[in-house]
Length: 456
Image (cartoon, rainbow, N blue to C red):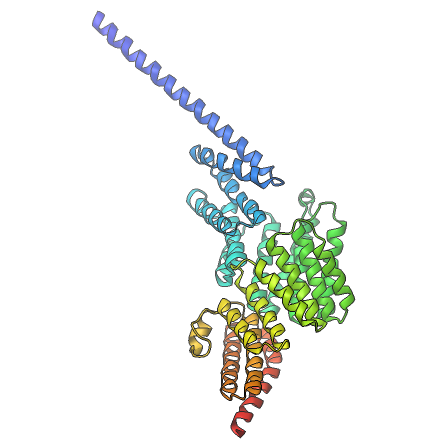
């Protein structure tokens, strides 16, 4: 009897101890859950101080993961994109977006809006950091295909449409880009009329839409329309109750400077460049944009020495990961060197620019298939090739070497092959017509050069 009572007492003691352990664990888990949410909230409200945001994000993440708060976990992880982008830490930007997307795939339902959002963020990374437009387009189209209007805001759909439109700009398919971007602008305008969205300031998205449509108009050589879009953007920047980031003003001023040059208004271009230089706290990449705009201004006025100096400054400050931008600046540098009669250095500049777009050992001996297999930004590549052919022709005259005429012919062959490849790949007939209209000049030059070699 006594032994039985002792066993019962021992069992009750173990049960009580087990309940205490379970209760303590529940309390500890609840404390971890609340602390994780608190850290996440501090991170979310600390965007004016990105170092604080980063610190509290990394305090929140392990607690959110430990307590299985997966939506908040992915949201907090994805929020690091803003911080690292603001600080210009591109490697960290890539890492956190991959991690956020992987977490969304692992812990959230297949069509969860955060999964779609992280795919969109990855597309932005591949577009802006790697400038890998095919991979970026894949992520954007994946996000758009899974969009569900009952679960996600239509502003998100507009954002993805805008990103797809911008990719088509980069790929040179301007008419298709215009279709996506006009749908983007209309979607944002529709959102602005819905009471739910009145609490959300979508004006900065509208500004981006104006900027993108201006870029399309630029490529279509409709400079009056381009300036009209940019002035609409500037009016929005200066009248909005919500302050815009420096990057918006920088893009607007530099692009207004460029279109003013196209409209033969150097006075306006100078004013916009000065406004860009006056912007506070520019990062090195942003300084590079202003120096590039200044170089373009000097080049338009045939002031080639200051144009070259400004181009060199732009190259020195530009992030090397932005291969398309580096290639564009090398093309301008080549033009400046050519005008200053530094022809060999100019030719070398085009080679450097082309290697950013299609890395190959030698552009003099590479096969067409090798070059066309892996190139980025077809319009930039075409411009570099045309500048290169012009330099080679001038070298032939200056040095009396006909071999440069042969290499110029080979360069024109690259131009023709690349143009044909683009026509085959484009989805819109309008884009093919656009390329055809702009290819007339260089085909005439190539034919004239071939005739010259034949006569020789």
